Amino acid sequence: MKKMQYAVIGLGRFGSSLAKELMSLGYEVLGIDKREANVDDMSGVLTHSVQADWNDEDVYRSLGIRNFDCVVIAISEDIQASILAAILCKEQGVKKVVAKAMSDLHGRVLEKIGVERVIFPERDMGVRVAHLLASPSLLDYIELSNHYTIAELAVPSRISGKTLRELNSREKFGCTIVAINKPGEVIVSPSAEDRVYEKDVMVLIGTNQMIERFEQAIH
Image (cartoon, rainbow, N blue to C red; front, side, top):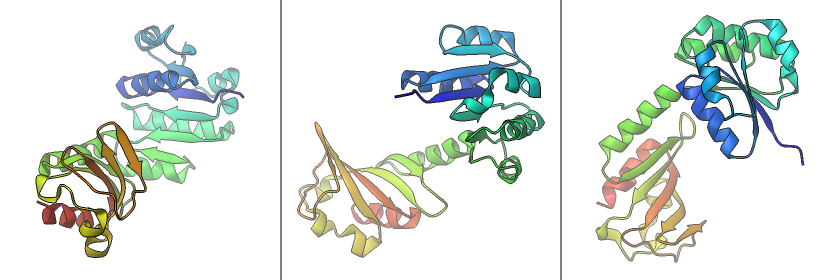
């Protein structure tokens, strides 16, 4: 089976971290950056790393950029260069373009030119950390959409030993416990008779308000 091939344009902190993680997952990764130091840092780490002007159409053509399964535009210091790189990738026929945005306006422009997925690493991490700081029992928080969130909550002593039926999170609060992370095992799609204990972690899906009400009720 052919390995997925990724190209990462921009090998700064975000781009290099992403590229290395894709390599660790077993994919082939081409890194492109105009700065020699960044390319040298990735030499021998990625499948290929190339120093080139990321706004030169001929560069993309010579690299066969259209043959990659996904191109990630991780240029962070130049919005104009990021947008132009996205346009050139789309014109070359890249199947999937993912781009990092530095502002909502930047993100809207990227969406307008056909970028399949726009990511906001700094904003999303800021939101995530804020929620973790605001709630001591919240272990992790990921926003799935504008409305729904997946969150991990530590089980407090007050509800230790209770079944999911007794907690009744869905009927009372609207959020659903989709997994229980127990020491040594994970119960996915737990039944109403499964019990939670201290040191367990509940994984919930719901709106921020639903999860917040549930959290307040169990403490």
